[in-house]
Length: 147
Image 1 (cartoon, rainbow, N blue to C red):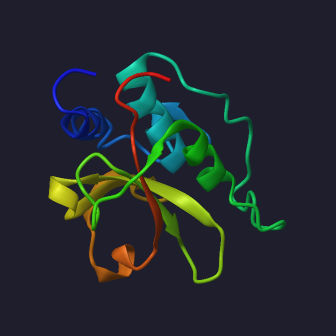
Image 2 (cartoon, rainbow, N blue to C red):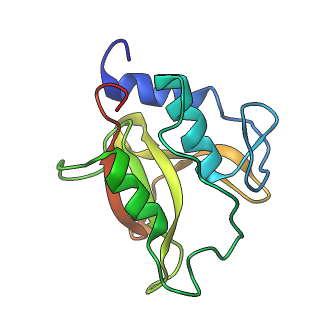
Image 3 (spheres, rainbow, N blue to C red):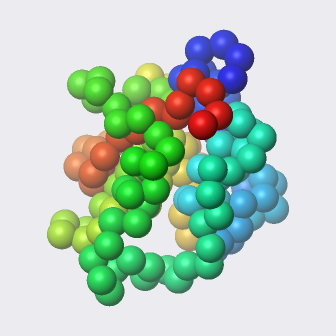
């Protein structure tokens, strides 16, 4: 990763803006979901993904209440220690109170925005408004180099 890690992550994520939403996809310009965006950014930074994600459904991990994304992030990333979201951090969101955290995004513009992919919108940059901030379950930083 050249330059500051945060800048490299945000720069790579910006390349994906405008990619259409496609469940389970991770191909810049062709299709991605939120996990596919993060997988693609990781590949852009390190060359290969740290593990295969395998197939998943829209309600994955909910029936058993498993925090699969959180567990995967803990295996490959570093829990964030800053007071609030900072550019380049991976943000893990709960879409409903009490639900498993199953949406991902990358903080941008100094933590004021998030780059993420979701149905009917594709990969976009959204303001990290109070409703989005309130959904953040965890934050992680990308490792300094490929694990």
